[in-house]
Image 1 (cartoon, helix red, strand yellow):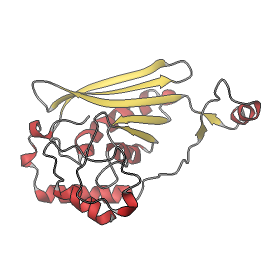
Image 2 (cartoon, helix red, strand yellow):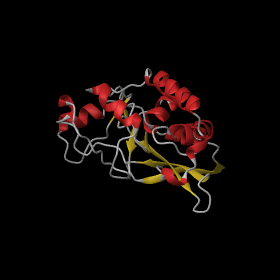
Image 3 (cartoon, one colour):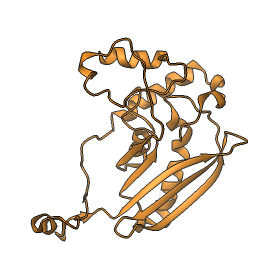
Image 4 (cartoon, helix red, strand yellow):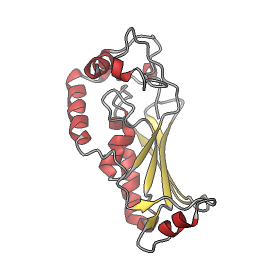
Amino acid sequence: MEEDASTSGNSNISPQLVNEWIEIQDSLKKRLITDDEFDWKLPPMKDQDSEGMEENQDSNVEILKYVGGVDLSFSRNDSLIACATLVVLDISTLEVVHEDSSIIKLRIPYVPGFLAFREAPVLLELLKKMETTSPTLYPQVLMVDGNGLLHPRGFGLACHLGVLADLPTIGIGKNLVIVYLFRVPSRLSSCLVGFGFQNPSGRLTLDQRIFFESMA
């Protein structure tokens, strides 16, 4: 869950630690799978033709059934106190088949571009716990409150958590993000609709400028 960086106290994060985080992101990104290599198929739609239904009804084909979602909610009085939650639905019935939460005190403040180092560990613990206690209901795909590939280094919270948990993830950012550019690299001009970084000052951070220059 993205927070207002101005209230997160990130002044205690050293440049050395940020560099370490970048190295970790770059290392984990090598394990990122962006192709649809699932062991399951989507369930048949009501209006699907008979050929498609027969394909999905193949006894050897696993059908997507359990979809999970994770998020953190923060205390209004202390931005380091949070409630991490994991919920799993049976998408055929929309029934909640599993839910778990944990109240924790975060040790890392919010730093733009490095949300995973703040939130991924506690979310991963919830997934590991479920894998032990309710393995038959374990999600086949996970929806994450945070970006995935739409990130300065192409490796946001959804990607980070997906790699560590070995799960397909869908990153969902709630806030509309806008970027102000004096020039747009030509090969990006056709795909920048709705793409950018939230920055109240209306100026790019150094990290964001480096990102765009590297893609030019």
